[in-house]
Image 1 (tube, helix red, strand yellow):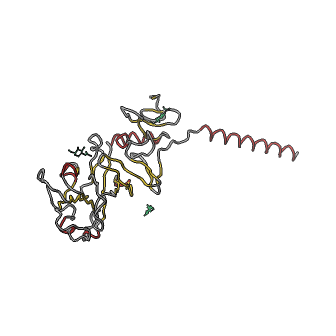
Image 2 (cartoon, rainbow, N blue to C red):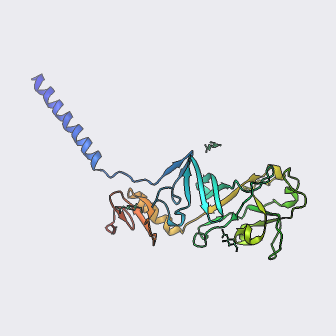
Image 3 (cartoon, helix red, strand yellow):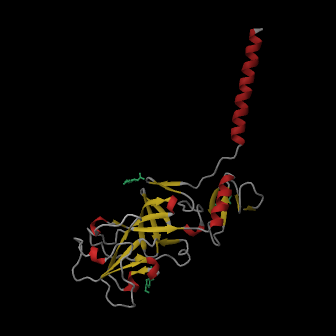
Length: 261
Ligand SMILES: *[C@@H]1O[C@H](CO)[C@@H](O)[C@H](O)[C@H]1NC(C)=O
Ligand SMILES: *[C@@H]1O[C@H](CO)[C@@H](O)[C@H](O)[C@H]1NC(C)=O
Ligand SMILES: *[C@@H]1O[C@H](CO)[C@@H](O)[C@H](O)[C@H]1NC(C)=O
């Protein structure tokens, strides 16, 4: 009698294990576009892998030996941090000057591709200090930006006495193209309000860049992720937005019938 019970229990247990395995295998595995570079997490709307993230940020970020790099027509920048709650990236340009260093030369400034510009732009609290500008090709709106300006910067150890200096914010100049502006170099510093920046030696050097995508794109991405997909885009023109569902891609969500081959 006891033997029969034991056999039944064992059979039930094996059946249970079999069923557990099966159901686990059948449930859709959530696809993810999340990547890591060094200790930085890259996630929507940004992307590291081909076809991942919003198409506005394609061919932008690269991971080189554990360093996250951001590539623009004006140069390559080191992305030191991504602040997802504030939709911002903190960049550093090895070619730019800081209070302590004169820069390595060959700085290009900061120029975003016109098609990408609506989605990626230095924040208004980033001061660009244009250095050694010769011909005044056009009237530059020089003045302190977020409490940072040339008066304080001129007290820096790396300052070259005769060099002209003009502090501008990105929105007032549109693009910081050092060739076009006829400047020798630049320095960038950002201030995280509401903290007032102190003397130039204590500023945070770098460029704070804001990224954004239309709200309805964020919404459709949330629907895609809720269905177990990852938000991506076509790997070639016209770079349409896609919900990546693993074996197939969809234009909306992994639950919907709309498919894209
Ligand atoms: C990431 O690593 C760098 C140095 O490797 C360190 O300075 C930074 O604080 C780290 N950031 C985080 C968020 O852990
Ligand atoms: C889905 O889209 C991704 C990203 O564009 C692409 O790499 C992949 O080949 C597509 N998968 C299918 C099954 O078409
Ligand atoms: C900067 O301006 C120069 C001269 O107008 C132009 O040739 C160059 O392509 C521009 N650089 C960038 C990165 O847009």
